[in-house]
Amino acid sequence: MPGIGKTTIANAIYAQIAPYFENMYFLNDIKNSSLFSLQQRLIFNIGKATERNISTTELKEIFRGKRVLIVLDNVSKLEQLNALCASREWFGEGSKIIITARDRHLLKEHGVGHIYKVKELDESESLVLFNSKAFRQATSQEDFAELSRQAVAYSRGLPLALKVIGSLLRERTISDSEFALHRIKMFPQHEVQSVLEDSFNDLNDEEKQIFLDIAYFFIGMNQNDVLQRYNRSTQRTTLQICRLEDKSFITIDENNKLQMHDLLQATAEDIIRRKSRIKTDQ
Image (cartoon, rainbow, N blue to C red):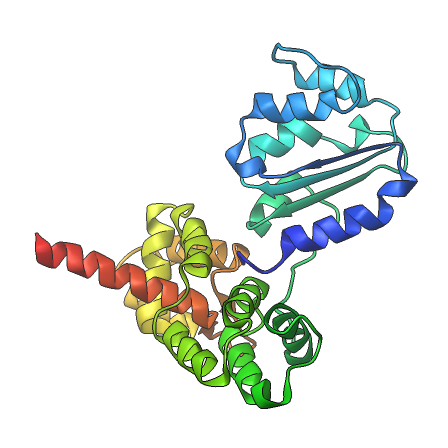
């Protein structure tokens, strides 16, 4: 899920283990970079700068035998992985390649050995993060304890939301903070919603429509009942729902019911409202 803290975790791991590697590279913002620029950034770090495109075979030779630590952050396409780390055999023994991506299926397709799904923070962890942003300390001020609990409940463990809301409420009076939190609940913060909507825009048209349908009509419904509502191939719809789950837009609980994070649902509802407004204007 976007905003869940994948990059933050990768940064923390990188900082902790980087001293044990002679060659280390943290490639951020891979999604918005060309393959050429990514390869240039990689090879520049080992003093092999070149202004021409290089083949994967050449890149493999550059890394051959080297024990490296590489973080590939925000990968969005299989071709990026194929161009930067096509095989474990490219690198020396003991190398570590850390990949962050919003799409679990992408990692499976590339044959990644260990996949870790980042979970939402629990209530205790959420309070610590929120308080650190709102009050610059791990615990809330006494008068703000209830407000902190409300903000944490609204954010439902999403680090991005906790950081944005906490920073927004910093150094406000209790009455100002209560009013601001009320407005946030009514009108989600642009900084949070833009990140969530950016991920929505990466979906294909079918995935977008099914995501919006689930958000508006099918939250809490059994997946089998939802499939019967669509006048199309059940197999195809099942595949699209699985893809949405791989990308953390939805979850399917132990009772086979479709669930969604509240902030993703709010983003979907806002998209639907805007679409309806455009149709009305036309």
